[in-house]
Image 1 (cartoon, rainbow, N blue to C red):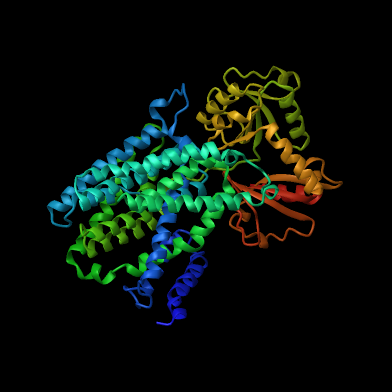
Image 2 (cartoon, rainbow, N blue to C red):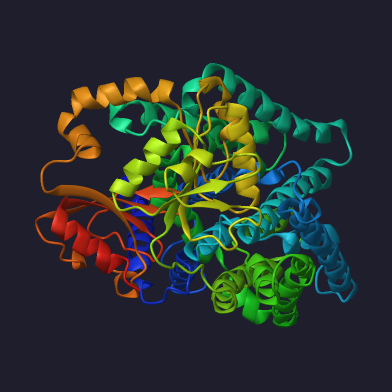
Length: 610
């Protein structure tokens, strides 16, 4: 075959990957990855058979799966695995509820697999049980983020349940495959070397790459840094994939561990690096993987087999029961709707169940028709579960413009409060634990107590922790996170203690670290620094909370802002977006606006009008 013609199938796949998202824009309930699988079925062996698997496409699909598992590991926030000391609700912590739910789910999956084997619907109890235990972190996380639920105790509980389901089943599948292919030999202990390698990489990274901990606000001061980290991240992924292959473990476990190591090294603040990795993965490799899943899908085998006609609906029902029944433990802390919604969302299966089923097919422990049934279950649950969850669990309500709360009895705290008040921000001081606010009372600022967390308090834009003692600030941060406050901005005087504050929703400010950064910014961009600090005559920089539903889902280019208004950035949850014409606004976005004072105030009023 002509070399140029060998690239035609890949060109077709990439062209279709480009068309799928806009084609599904009117069907927001349908995940893009499901659309890619359906398109792959149309052009593959189940449809017109235009694209046939070859070495190049299979290799790129394998890389796509590795990158997907790598990004799943990168999404792991290990600070969620700890419960703050002294928590009154320690027995109902997200980690404990998630662990109980998962292990109950694992037991139900094993029982279901045994029944399926007994009735002759499948022939491998262990593999089928593990496949049924999976969930899809790649679906759970975006759905929770979209609903504004990912940062609270409920969202953390569901996220941890998905994380445990992904990680533990991935590990057990790796061990089982090793036993199945090589038997009970000493070689199975080699799988443990993957974890040793992960710990070694983490230790070396923290020792020799301390600069990755710094949260530099202006990346153009060190323009090569992010690319260097990008190259290192890809090298880390390939190293663990190769090591897993050499040790006889599954590639997906190595890729997942590489992502977890990178997550621990970078902390929750490296959004630019994560964005670059997601651009590479979701821009090229991952769509190829899902399209090839559809291309390889054997719908005729599913339709021919009588066994599969029975197996598919049975698997669909059990896929939901296996997750919904164990999720009833969530009722100990959450409402019935949240409990059922969490179980339904955890029933989503996609990448991992497809990968695990493919491994079973390769080993010969499941046949073509059973594999097709599992892929069908993945497509159905990935489509149905988010829709049902959105119907059951309401999105977090965004009320009137939030206030800024400050903890601290220092001159810096008072100066910050006065600066915020002069910019028309609502400000009050908060007393948490032993943190008093007598000076704030004398200065005329409202002082409230946080004995019951956020209950009874105004809606918060963020919480500033500004006492003079780093140890005290760390304790207040832990208490604030337990109460559900997010985001938290905390003063850290000693850069050596930054690791103590690495947590979701916590942003540190260390004067010693940022002094050089701000001076460099002044030298390179004096006008930008002037805008940030004093502003120019008649101009303002303001941040508006988008609660006006008429703007939700609108692209930036349709806003017709006028020549004297500029949208500088959009903060969505813990992500910071650089807006462009196609960027769509979402309710709950914090939009940073710059322009003429009157126009800025008018746009802010429109955004914040409910």
